[in-house]
Image 1 (cartoon, rainbow, N blue to C red):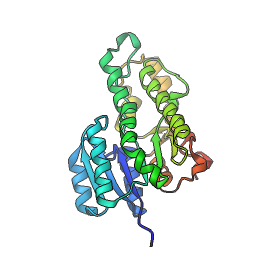
Image 2: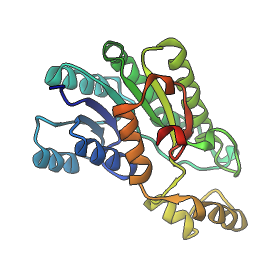
Image 3: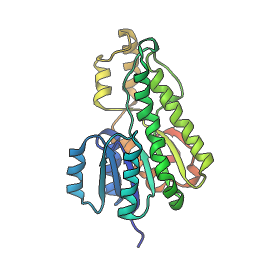
Image 4: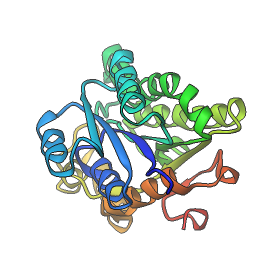
Length: 249
């Protein structure tokens, strides 16, 4: 009988990340989760058991944290079949003239550098398993529609380019970037309520009108990401598309 797959998930406590973990556990996967918040991870492990769920508490842009997650997966189960690179932030939304270098550094550290840090540790094992890397990206990296979103959008452009680079460099690894659209989270609800800096009242109302029809629940893209981490075929490598793309069904 085949062993259940082993998946590392970054940012797996809330929102899309929690939905990814939920689906993976339903599919009998074994998981290592990285997140900053320990208590939900501890509770999850107590419920599921350490034979199926391990975790690391720390910053995903830290090489040591990512290496620790990889080491735990290999020491516990001997293989890594997939990595779901979900950790990200949508903050520091400011006009360029109001930004500081620390704002841009923070966005890129979490949205970009963290992914590369994890991949550098995981790639040797993913090559052995002919595994999968599923990136949570955003169509904000394709077209800038709103003022103040430059740094966030640029970070997602970088994510998409790294997916393409990984596809060229590691043909045996299936790298995919998925756009979750607008996910129903506390931050998005804050925007809908008009409580968001960096945009004028008129811009905010226009943005809210754009958001509402696209609003999805975390489990919708989360379930697709989990499914791709477990079953995506190599002919999908390099795909960059919305979560409900026909190729992912």
